[in-house]
Length: 202
Image 1 (cartoon, rainbow, N blue to C red):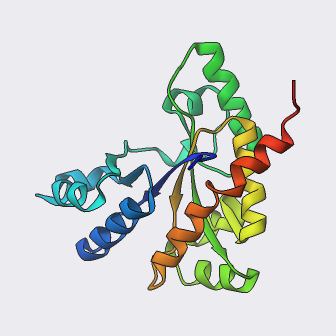
Image 2 (image 1 turned 120 degrees about the horizontal axis):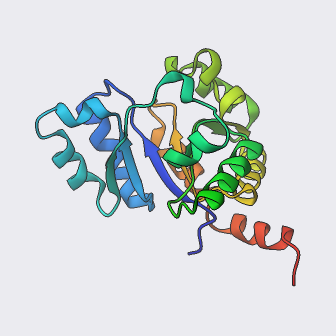
């Protein structure tokens, strides 16, 4: 099935091992490309190996440490690491242009918090129950937030701006399986066709 963007899920620092393994299994079964973990996860004996087994066929990626001031930067620095950390088509386009100028061939990823739901109230409730989404990292400010239809439009805009993939930071609650499935639906099925229709024919 065609995908609009590659899709990975980010696990937060300090997540319980059982929760991490559960999310990794779900991500692998749903067709996520990767499971990202923070640098400190690599120091936990056996954690990466166990996560890799659970996530198959998805890959496990240990992220590099990113200074706070790098979040949301445009242009050359975002291009250098291949990651934009805010839901901004303008910043994605700037990073893509910088990558083209520099001859960088790596994928351009957008790493953002996401909270979607069948209604705006459901999306808001999920975000409010997640302590990691306080302040500037709330999905309504930095990421993708709202109903599926609203989120679909935002994903399309990122793809049009030049993004190759998403690394999503999700609310880790009891219905995380439902959230993972809803986010996966943003990049498959009708969404790639919608992008094709929006692009001018030659």
